[in-house]
Length: 260
Image (cartoon, rainbow, N blue to C red):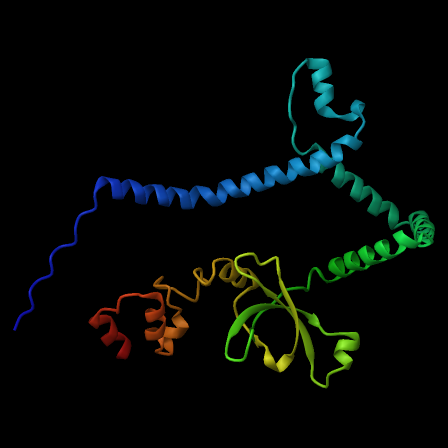
């Protein structure tokens, strides 16, 4: 008995075609536009803080207005001056005279009761971040959170030190558990190393997975683009994922090829 032929799929109208083209263009333009806007806004914010400290006789925008009678808004002057100032201070601080000046300034600041605690805390945080900036968040991992049986993506920070490490017999590590879709906020957890599963994906891929709420998998994790991880297909558990995502069942020919 021959099955009746399926009717041809309906043709897409010109409105649907325009809508698809608009969405495609939006996907291309939105990341570029947002990146340019963020850089432009950040540079303007830095300029607004730095330019008031620059004398008018050294401000290029004011010099152009004075000599050429042209009003221009040169973005980045404050950023350039901030970089030059920071490099100069760092170069001086590495010398003998700079070190003695820093010690003298710190001794004066530490004598002030209210400023002493604030300065010491900020200095410790800055030194910790700059000292461990190259080694922080080099690996992504899975941890059981908020209860056993539920896994969440986290980032390994460092090995536990001090009182936290001494209070446990096991090797303790600190991990940062980000929230979705804003990975800059989250929770600091201290877990035994044996309870953490290291992932092969990079930190960038794990961050994309967190930000997209599980919609964007690493390039090697969903080659066919069906939003079902390839690892799940290999383990033949894609049925549960398809039910959750409400995806249609694969064609019979595809299932035969997978079973073969």
